Image (cartoon, rainbow, N blue to C red; front, side):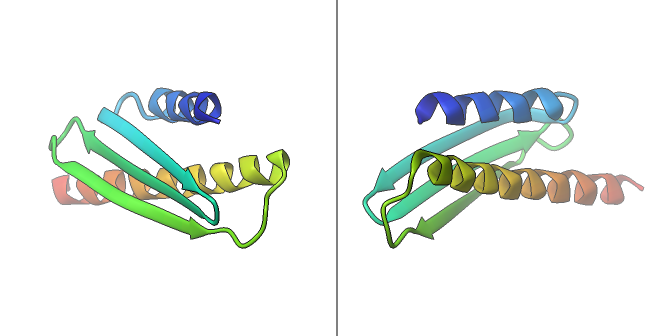
Length: 93
């Protein structure tokens, strides 16, 4: 699973390479819980933005379902990055 998370992280970093100074993701899983901690800073302000996403899982997931949950979490991470970039650009105008 870590390989898949690393792959998604690298895709996100490549997509936002003009904006991101740093990006990191820490994934933790225990039966019934997924926890993602992520942080990033933009080149414009170098301020570290951190968030944590916890998802409770009530039943055993198939590999496909597990990957779908990780994809959804990365979509949310991307939304956070987009919001931060937009807010920074609005401040500059």
